[in-house]
Image 1 (tube, helix red, strand yellow):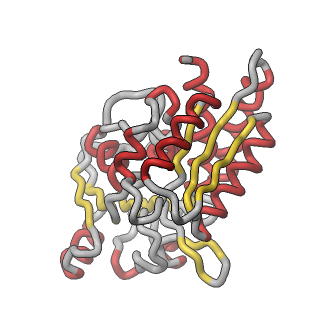
Image 2 (tube, rainbow, N blue to C red):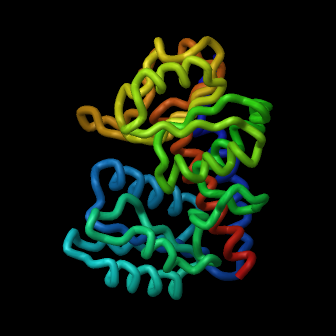
Length: 268
């Protein structure tokens, strides 16, 4: 069993980023636009701020109220893109806001989250995909012809990981809340790789998986003020590679995000 130490892997990336930032002639700036952030979002915002400070990166945040409209969020995004090298729209946004329209408004050369990614060869990957790719290379994980089950089809995890897995030659099934429970159990029992990104505690249980499965847990939810993933803690006992929450994909994702910012500024 390999429990991935995302913090150590992230430190490798951040050390290189800090060295490059120190050599820049202009300060590196990241803008974050959020709207009525929930508990998990606030945790990630604080983490990003702290890491940015440690790397010598300037960060600006525009926290909009729950009453904000799609138009005001887009206006904030465009202003942020004009002021900084990269822009993050922190998801989720409130239901009344057209998230797709907001994300389309992010200029491509400012999009550190790489929302336009569809599985093509790229130097800038969506942060979760970048983290999974980094771990896969470190542990020599070959995705070709593997049975992959992805929980959730969200913009940050499910959809980009689907494109990534397909580009690597994997056989992929995406399961959502409407998927029949028996079908889910059958799929997970046969899966070689499982990716979680729903934000529902204990979504994946030990009895649902086979020995030696690879589990990438990118889910996040609150349990008594503590951040937890989608996988039951005992899943790690059966997995050959397992990313815990916290301390797995999360820290690595943020390091990849800042690395994307550095790449975007070099292009600009």
